[in-house]
Structure formats: C-alpha cells, structure tokens
Image (cartoon, rainbow over all chains, first blue to last red; front, side, top):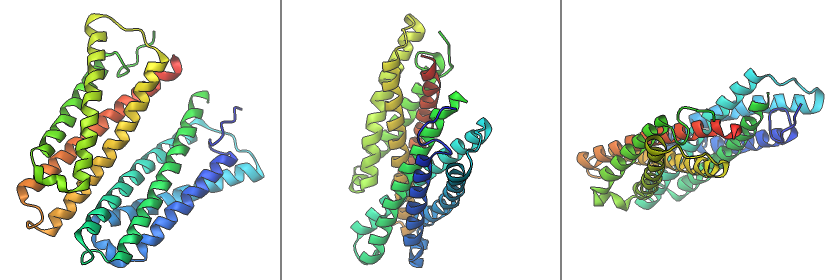
Length: 152
Length: 152
C-alpha cells in the first residue's frame, strides 16, 4: 500500500492530530476561563466549534496511535471519505469561528477598555490565534487524506 | 478529453463564474455605498477581498465564454493548477471576510441603534450574505477543477 506522509494511520498524521488537540484545547481553555465572554455570539460559537474539534482529533489520534504502535489497520475508502468530510467541515467551521472571534475582539479593543478590559481581550486574542493554528493543522490533514483517496 | 461538468471551459463553469461575479459585486456595491462603514476593519477587509474576487471571476468567465461559444481551448495542467490555487485562496479569504462581517454586524446590532442605524446594519448584513453565496460558488468551482486535475 502506498504510504502518503500525513495520511490516516501514519506517524505524521499522529503529530498533526496531537497539534490539533493542543491548539483546540488551549483555545477552548482560554475562552472558557472567562464566563463574561459568553455574552458575545462569536465567542460562544468558537467554544462550540472547538468543543467539536477536540474530541474529533482525539479519537483520530487514538486510531493513528493504534495504527503506528500496535498494528497497521487496513485502509477502507469509506472510512477515509468520512474522515475527509469531517475534517473538511471542521476546518471550515474553525476558520469561521477564528475569524469571527478575531474581528469581534479587534472591534472591542478599538472601542476602549470600558467594553473590553485588557486581560479579557488578550485572552480572546490568544484564543483566536490558537483556533487559527488548529484550523491550519486540520486543513493539512484534509489535504493529505484527500491526496490518498484516488489511490484507494 | 474527459468533460467534467463545472470544470474550466464548460458551460456549468461559466454559470458558476457569472454567479460569483453577481454576488461579489452586489456585496461590494452594498458595502461601498456607505462610506461610514469603512471605519471598521472587517468591513474594509470584505471590500478588499470582494475587490479581488470580482476581477478574478470576470477574467475566468471570459475564458469560459471563449471556450464555450468560440473555440474549445486545450486544457493545460499548469494553468488549471493556477486556477485551482487562486480559487482556493480566494474562497478562504471570502469565507473569512463574510464571517468577520457577519459577526461584527451582529455585535453592532445587539449594541443598539446608536452604534448602527438600521439602514446601515441591514446593508452590511446583506453584504455578508452575498459574500457567503459568492464563497459557496467559488468553493464549488475549486472542487470541480480539483476533480479534473488527476486526469490531466
């Protein structure tokens, strides 16, 4: 079987998934620490999306780890298609959430400290950055898996 | 040569490009009519991105129209790759711009009419909707062209 680095079941894919877990959970954590931020729709949306990305990446990381360290699993086109579609949808949702959070934070920072204390705003900026990083890794996973699909 | 509906040089692609031109120029027009809106970063970003999408779609629509009505042009993998990468980048930028505009508008609407008179806000909502529609068509073009690429 052809080995595409980064495709499902390889060590590069495991590294990508671990990066996604770290970035998405960091984004979730920094946003969830401030309950005041939930009054903004975009911030709640980011929390929802990152709450979907973290378990998805975690479960695929477990599959990769099993495949790398214990026994190489056979690749089925149907499973790969589900993984690609899921990654694709989640990468779009993460990009949308990161952009919304970034733009709302930028607006609040410009509006002054009465709307957004500096501690809160720096947290939501950090959270948006982590969401962007999580998006880029999730998009890389989609591309690598998509590359493998025609060969199956 | 294989004919994928929606790939470069077909009538379906021409229809997609025309839709992109209509939606992106509508988005641009509704945003540009209000000079007051340019004080917000997200709205200026939307105008910039839509100002890139409109000429890109227009030039590819001309190529498609030439190919459909006058003479079928030979498909070159290098040209197709440039079209795919351009569409891909512009579709991501449009999605980001549409999400930013939508979230900032939603925030301004919730903040009350003193920040956003209803006429202004309904215009930016309309503009964001048009940008979303333009993104979906642009993404469809990317997918159809990507499907054709391995066969060349």
